[in-house]
Structures are given as structure tokens and as C-alpha cells.
Amino acid sequence: MKKIFAVIALSVAMLGSAQAQSGLGNLLGGLLGGGKTTSSTSTTTSSTDGAAVQQTIGNVLGSLLGTVYSAAPSLNGTYLYKGVAVSMTQSNGNVLTNLAGTAATTQIENKINEVLAKFGIKEGNMTITFDNKDNTFVWTIGGFPLNGTYKVGDGEKTVTMTFGRTMQYFCMTGTVDFAGLDGGVKLLFTSDKMTAFLKKAIEKLGQKNNEIGTIAKLAQGYDNYKIGVNLAKQQ
Image (cartoon, rainbow, N blue to C red):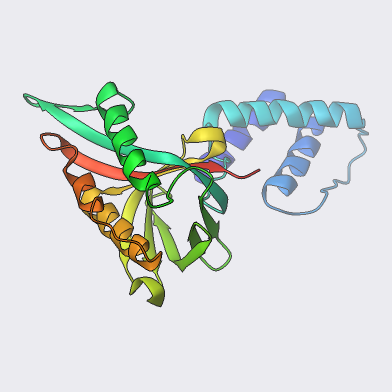
């Protein structure tokens, strides 16, 4: 906050006029959630001048403070399943290389997608809805809803999902990548956790899951193997 007011003071010093002070008052009112700010002065400022001053101050604030006023990304909304997402690393001496998006991860994603499609887990047949009003979610597979609560953390870079009684209160924590498709996200969990979730979910769908156990073994020889879902946000 001290930094913000220091920048504002600098903006006023740079503009140095009654118009600047009037524009600053209006700007502060907008930033702090107040109504329109007026000032008693003998100098009359036109609306055009005031708008120009506010724009100038806004530009100064934006350039100096960067994304201070940018809202943090939110999971709130409904997402459409677009396929499996895989993340893993490979050790080369003391260097770990992220293999996401490479031929290795694409090959594994394709294999997992083939397995899951046999159980009806495929594009167009699964959605996840997050509601930030009460931090609940509904993970729907083939029309079968799996309800629970979620909690985000670390600047919304992680999410903990706790399912309800239907899933025996199964809980898993994963990472959130907001660089998904069409404004969507990628949710990534450890391979063991994601495999355990898939086994439970498929059991609830009344199907056998003999092949699911093989998913966690597809990346043997790699490090930090994570499996998740690639989600596009519903418009």
C-alpha cells in the first residue's frame, strides 16, 4: 500500500495541477470502491481534461506497478474434458528437463486416452464444475455426478479436492495450470493419486477396471510423473 501511494504522489508531482488532483481524486475513488469524488475549487476542469489526466495517472500506475490490480485467476465455472494431460521430468546429470508437450508425453497421453475411452471417459463425456461461492465441485462422468468440496492454495496454483460419501471421502491435491485450452486449465495429480481416483470412479460407474493399474506404470524411468485432465472452459 505504501508503494501505491508513493507512486500516486509521484504522479501528482509529475502532473502538478488542480486538474491532476481532481483526476486523482476520481481515480482513488474508483480504486478504493468509493463514489464520485468532487473537490471545491475556483478552477473549473473540463471533463475532457479530467479524463486525460486520469488516463495519464493510470498509465503511470500500470507501468510502475505491473499487475498489482490484476485479479487472480479463478477456477469458478464449468469445464469440458478435452483429454488427458501428462507431466514428467527427465534427469540429465544434475539437470531436470520438463518433458511436458514433448513426443514422450504425447505418446503416453494417447495410450491413457485409449484406456479411458473404454470406460466412457472421453471428450464430450466428462465435465467439472467449480463453484467459488461455497467451494463445491461436481465432477460428472457419463452423466454420473461425483460431488465434493475444493480448496485452492498458493496463489491458486494448487487445488485440493475432497469427494463426498459416494467416493468414500477420497481426497487428492494437485497443481493448477491456467494455460489450458480456450481459457481452460490443466489439473495435474501424482500418478498414484490419479490412478486411485480413476479406479474408484469407474467402480461407481459399474465397470471393471483391470487396465487402470497399468496407467501409473507407463512412464517408468521418468521422474515426477503426474497425470491429470486438460479442460476447456465452457463459454
